Structure formats: structure tokens, C-alpha cells
Length: 299
Image (cartoon, rainbow, N blue to C red; front, side, top):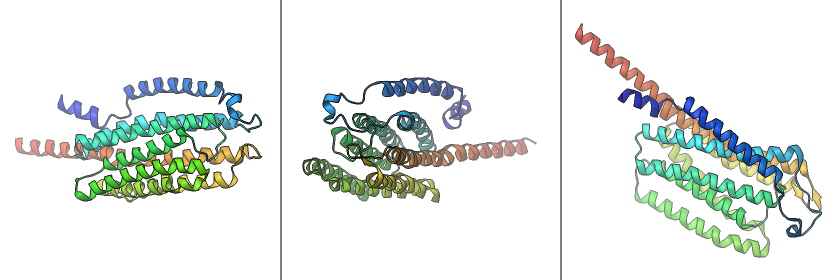
């Protein structure tokens, strides 16, 4: 009974139960995607300028699929992190922090979708409450995720948490100021905070997993991500005076798919490899050795 329970919690991630849940999720996400496709982005009276360019057709479908993909990726990541971190010997507090952090990513993406809907999917680096919520919850998510990888709490780890809290406070103060003067430069502290958090996240991830491939997480989640944000700002055009639908939609899709989502997927795979696959293999070898030794003694 104990062995079966261990197999259920440690090794059988991709089983019939998960396949059924995934099917239900795909159906639900299809409904979400359909609603996002049909509903108007924003009332024309609120748009301010009826000549604003919108992303339509195939590019719009691509953007919607890219964004709702997160709501399939994160629950899988939560399940793998829960089992993997538990197998690696981390306690409830650590596991809860990582689970909450991953949940916050979905909150951030939900806000981002709302923001893009009000833009009728034409990305523009503006200041809105939904945009702020996206960055706020995204940074909070990665802070919690990072805290969920702490092997031993020290004065340094507590100081880092205070530093992250102050960073969020500073961002909360600077963002409205950037809105008042309409200066995107006030968003630079957000990118600095994201880079800092990912630096800590990468270091703690390496200490836990002992796998150099953890460096791929910030490369994609920060490097690739911000590269496409830069390209969006440079070549994405303006929805009123210089519409560039193709570049805007393409760089927007790659910013999400090749950035945040790729980073989360890589991290999840590394945790699965170390905390579940290798853990299961090690347990099987240990069990085989014990059986062999038991047989030798009886003979």
C-alpha cells in the first residue's frame, strides 16, 4: 500500500487522471479563447479614436492561443513542482511558496489578457491599471517562486525578501508618475527588478538542482523576453499613425512564447528530471538492491 501511494505521488505525473483533467481544461480554454475572439475589444466610444488599428484574423488567433496556453502550462508546473520539491526534501512552507508563486503567474497573465483586449490586441507600451497588475503580480510570482527554493532561511534570505518588497513599493510609486508624464522610462525599474529576481531564482535553482541548464531559465524569461519587448518598441509601430500589424503581432507572440512561457517550461522540466524521474529511478535501484541483499541472506 505504501509503495503504491509513493508511486502515485512521485512518478505517475502523466497518467489517465491527468489526461482527463487536461481534456476538461482544453474544453474550458477553448471556451475562453472563443469568448476572447467574439467579444468586442472595447466600445468605440471609449476608444478615443475610431481609426485605431486592431490586430485581426490569424494573428489575433495566434495571440489568443499564446496567452491562454499559460493556463494549461502553469497547472502542470504546479503539480510537478509539488511532487518534485517534496521528493527533494523541502518542507510545506517552501512548497506552498512555490505553488502560490505559480498561481500568481496566472493572475498576472489574466490581467495582461485584459490589457491587450482593451488595446484590441495591438501592443502599445502604455500605462493602465491592467498593465500594472500584470507586472506587479508577475514580479510577486517570481519572488515567491524564488523563496520556494530556499534550502535554509538566513538573515541574507530575509534581507533579499525585504529588498524585493521595497522594489515592489518603489515600482508602485514610479508607475503612476510615469503615467502622468507619459514616459515609458519609468518602467525601467520593473525590468531591473525582474532581472534581479531571476538572478536570485537562478542561483537558488542551481543550488537545489545542481544542473547548469538552469541558466536557460533567465536567458529565455529575461533575455529573450526583453529582446522582443525592445523590438516591439522599435518596430511595432503605432496603432494610430504608423500601424505595423505583422511586426507587432509577431514580436508580441514571440515575447510571450519564447520568453516567460519558455522559461517556466524549462524550469518545470528540470524539476521533473531531478525531483521525479531521477528520484524514481534512484528508489527503484535502492529497492532492487534491498531485494537482492534480502535474497542473499535467506539463501
